[in-house]
Image 1 (spheres, one colour):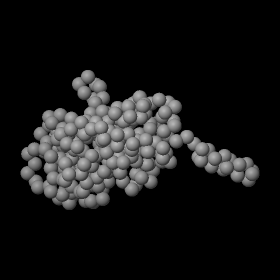
Image 2 (cartoon, one colour):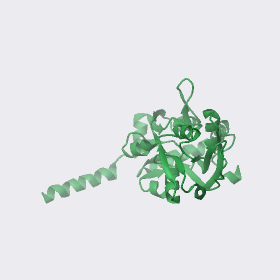
Image 3 (cartoon, rainbow, N blue to C red):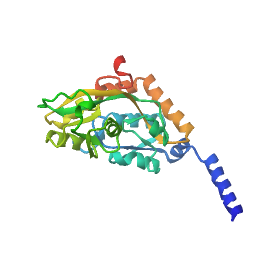
Image 4 (cartoon, one colour):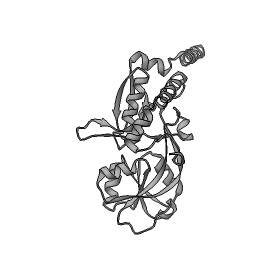
Length: 259
């Protein structure tokens, strides 16, 4: 029994050592499996014809083209995207995923492709002055399940969190007065509020800036290099800036002070 276990351990070790890099896998398959919410405008969403569109959809197409692969998009609720990535259901998540130490324990990331910050959303007729998370003590906050914004509210303490699968549901309940405020990505808010056509407005910024990257399974150095090289190529030929300006009017890869 001991010899058998030892042999199996050696086989497992050898399999890990010689396992194909994710780059080899996607090249052999010919596709890049990209997961996103599909309900997070202007990053990714479905248009009136139910066709996927948005900044990250266009970026995913451009990255796949640089890698000489066909993009294959999958949509799902935010709370399941990283779990699905960890389970090997897709190759990358392209959904404004913040690069945190906690996430880096589980995934590797590309270089940052956007730099953003958190911002409050409130009703247009809100008379109370919410200038920070501390001002929401004892209030109810709408947050996306499993997001870094949910973690931010929890870390603040004293705020009741109400969890939602996507920003669209949060905005609906905020407009109806079921929560006192919401917090989300500052880059999302202008476009999303315009599209939602609800009596809401952007509130105060909260917290510092955050870098967003593309997560993928750990231990794939060739794939990481290929993704980073593709992003660099998109910056060099102006494609990234063109896509960014189309959706945001600015280059979202630069820090707010440099825009």
